[in-house]
Length: 323
Image (cartoon, rainbow, N blue to C red; front, side, top):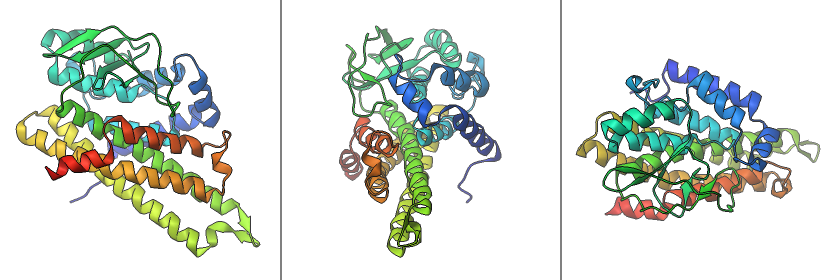
């Protein structure tokens, strides 16, 4: 069986990478972090208007593209690689929640807004709600979906590229919505791993010691090869999880939910540990320069810490698999 991107998905990947290369370089990412909304408003508009990123999983009858969550994961992986702050993860999770739990009236009211680029989020853990401050639509799970007020400010976080806030609302119960969120978050993790590997390989080709690039030393080659293995195995696990999430969203059912739960737990446990390792190696193989504020490696390190906590820790997902 061929396990890879289709031609259309590869085109989407290349389109997003080109857009982010032009509009989400290191300087732009840092400017977005320091901005009041916490993300680049212009980049978000480009993603929504030129690519239809927010509209990808929205059915056509609600003014969406009619693609799947897997296409959203393709975009999220590239956003993870750029480290650009973006409300796409939160909005995509909210879109899935609306499709799964919303009434027909709610779908008709909310999904066109999501497709148009309004920022939405769903309360999974009321103490850590992605992009809640200033969101256009904050949803809580309480015998269906209910709209709740958006908080005024975000919390102070280690990873400045992710905005979190507390919301007065019940936590979403364990189940498919949480599993969809966990699966989609692994796409961001894989992108961050790829960024760490790319930066490290570029640095070791340029940095010289004893008259030759340090990337030619066998010990460092082995360490970067190990990083590559972690990136590629994580990508496979993430693709499997997001494909399961896409399948469940299109055809909900007990069997699809069980597959999603298993693959999301596998991907989260593997990708969290892998990103921690890749981020640590990125710092180490940059020889200390990566711990400075001016270098982007600290952003990879912080992203690793944040994603390993956001939708459950690795050991918690492994424990769930053992039940």
